[in-house]
Length: 636
Ligand code: ADP
Ligand code: MG
Image (cartoon, rainbow, N blue to C red; front, side, top):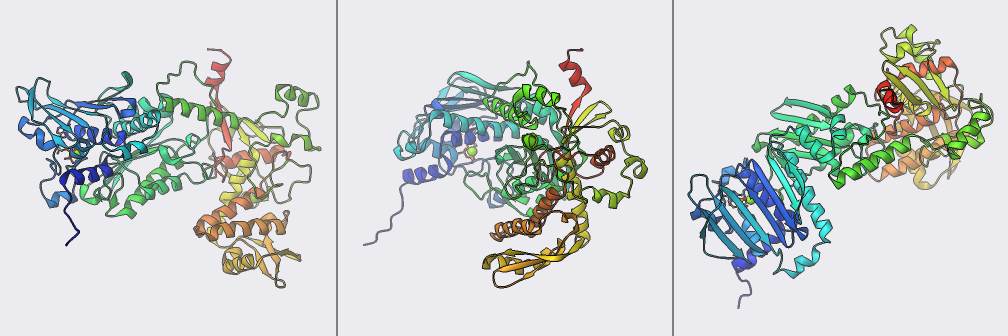
């Protein structure tokens, strides 16, 4: 006797429900999408107890004819897909015709609806897949769906739900995505009877973003827009200083649908490379519009992943749009005291502000012994001329991580002869900027003689409308890095033969790595060869690093090679190695600089790319406007 049986419809629906209806937030998503597909201009969402007890979505859309309401809640019934061809050019958010049926199979569902030309509305109820009779009801045009007791008949699903507050947060996040995707539509969200969001219709995108993330963040966004190859891109990128610890703040929309796309997430990070620390993620809102035939949304039951017909073009368009925007912008973080009138109506905003404040705090290094410490150091002479400064190592705020313990520390050793040679070789012996760069703008023209070195670490200079505080090490690092990058694209770095080769003990793995990366080492100006079974000798070394220990640089380099061996990109590795070299060659915190050196360094600021951040992504410069000073001193 055969053992294969056709599954009963009820069970089929429950299985399908498992894919689409995972948790209350998935119900909210399906219902809001239906409202948007129905052309609603106002959507009201209400949940109780994390959505498990009640989810209600009401809209003023086209409504459903009384004769159709039972079909709407039946499996595989949709008004959105006429034939197979339509499946490959989907212009609506829904099309599978299974959401309402699936939701109805795992809850008590009540749908009421009225079309604009009908005299009365119709109501249909579904209890665990059993569809009740349609009855007439009075109601305004539009549709309301109420979902009660979600998963009442699927204990296994119920167990997977998290706490009410977690489920509520997920609903809020979904609401956020959909509302961000459709700024012209009015939305509101009520949780346990309390309205948390009330968004007016006809908002612009940036107004909608401001509604969720606060006006301060929205003010800082950089707008970009381009249309090429049938792809329209519009977006808002936050400055790198707003970067977050997760990628959740990269909002990506395609034809009105929020999606997750690894390729584009990478592209966004790529655009910000070198402007933020490696473990940070940019905040950006990117809206793509293209022919629906160019993107297949029928890949995933919840339609949050898509397949591109021409992913390469999408990627490069997004990347270059973002890149150009960032390149054109002044990314120097402004020092601003928090406004006492700031209005916060969302817990995520609180979190954002908190992080911004923490970040802000990190930009201002704590004095070793608090404010009295400042007084102490003043009485001892606040700006020592290169004396022993061992007790001031904590002043260095941007200590490089791990690999180069001594590289950034304060010291009284003579500054490497080569430290400033880079721009000398590039711009001639006189570092005075105006000799070589007659067209420098703003601060640079006014800079000579106007800059001050503080604590042998920071440079303070005047600008047209305020002042800049520069971290000398961070900025110099960026300058050298950009120079190295330029040189290495043109060939190999200049190298210098060592009179006495330096030796380093290596493991067989490391020996193999050196062999594999021989070309790379040569590009970097290093010549290394085996010197016995477990030792290598360094014969030539980048001139720029003449004053650093070849052994240590090679050790660090081997660590990076090993890390990269796990499957990294060679160009990424080159960048990392250049970062490391730039860090070692740059002036350190605590190095006293001559006025000429200060001027030269400041002049470089407006000449190199991405001067707002060091190669590790930390800021090189903070700015404060005269306006802000006036505000702080209560002059206005
Ligand atoms: P799909 O959205 O994939 O078509 P659903 O199960 O979500 O499938 O909805 C089934 C049908 O019910 C839709 O095709 C639509 O015709 C109708 N419908 C559902 N919700 C609404 C609504 N809010 N307004 C108007 N029609 C709706
Ligand atoms: Mg739907």
